[in-house]
Length: 429
Image 1 (tube, rainbow, N blue to C red):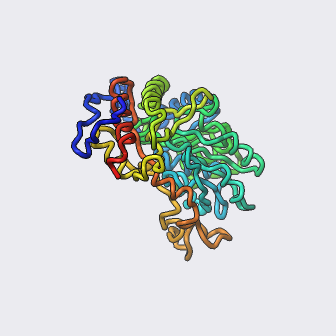
Image 2 (image 1 turned 120 degrees about the vertical axis):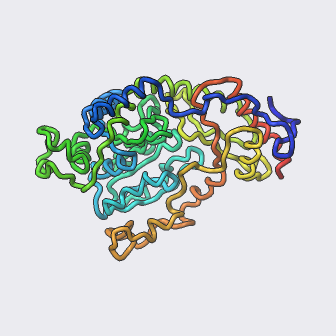
C-alpha cells in the first residue's frame, strides 16, 4: 500500500491503520515466573539484602562478557558510580554529548567535575567523534558516550581517541542493553558500561541500574562509594586505601537495589535475547517497508556488519524536510497520528543539555559560581548557539512505533501510514 492517491486522514480521508494492535506495544512482558520471583522476595522479607542481587550481577556479567557487574537503585546512580569508579573528581573534565538524557552528564556535578558538551552526528544521533579531540585539555579525565536510542556509537573512531590521550571511557548503555557493535556487546568497550533498567527500558526490572567492568578497582571504588553493607565483608575490598573506610560509604550515599527488582531481572535475562530478536524483526520490517520513501530516513544500523540496535529502545526516525516541501516534524507527526499510527515530533525525554541553564547558572553547592565550573579554570559553559548541529537536528527527529512483538500485517499498516503522509505531503503545505 503506498497511499499515493489517497486523501490524508487529517483532511477527512480514511485512516490507514485499521487493525487492532493487540499487545504489540505492551511492555514490559511480565509472566507468572516474574511474579513468583518477586513474591518470593517479599514473602521471605529479604528486599533489602543483596544475595539475590549478587546472583543477578554474576549472571548479567556472564551474559554481557565482563568480569564484574554491580547493581544500583537506578541508572543515574549507576552512572554516578561509574564516574567515581573511574576516579572523576573536583576540576576533572568529562566530555559527552549534549543531546542525551540528563543523567548521562549531570551526576558529574555531585563530584564537582566539569561536564564538557559535544555535538552529535546528525544521522546516528550519537556523539560525533570528530567533535571530541579538540575539546580535550590537560584536565580531561574521561569521555562518556550514549548509544542513543539503541544506535551504537562509532567505536572504531572513538577508541583511538581515548587510547591516544589515556582517557577513561564510560558507555551509557541505557538505550541499548544487549546491542552489538561489529559483534561486540555495547558496554564492554570502555572502562565501564552503565545503564538504567527501569520499567520502560529494553531490559526492564521495574526500577534499577547496573554497571559492568573488567577493572576490579573501578568496581571496588563504586562499592566503597555507595554499597557500604558489602564493604563489611572480608575480601570484598582489596585496595588498601579503600579498605581503610570499610563500613561507611565514601560518597555518603546508598546505591543498594531492592531485591524485588533483581529477582525480576534474573527472570528477564533468561528471555531477553529472544525478545530482542522479535523486536528487531518487527522494526526491521517497518523500515524495510519505508525504503525509498521521500522525506524519511531510518535511524538504524546495517545488521550485516555485526551491529544491531539491541531492544530498539525509543525508536526514532529522521525527517528530510527538503524532500517534502519543508513540512515540519510537528506537522508530519500530526498527520501520521491522524492515520492511526504512532508518531511524535521529539527525541522523547532527551533534549540538548546545553540549551538548559543548569550548567551555566546553577550553584548547586553554594560555591559562589556555577557548580559546573566552580573547580575549573573554565569561565563559561556551552551555551545556546555553540552546538549548531545538535540544535538543528531537533527539528528533524520523529518517534516511530516501537513494536514489542512481530505482527506482519499490523507493522505494514503502520509503515503505510508514514508512507501515505510522506507521498502526499503537498496536502500539508
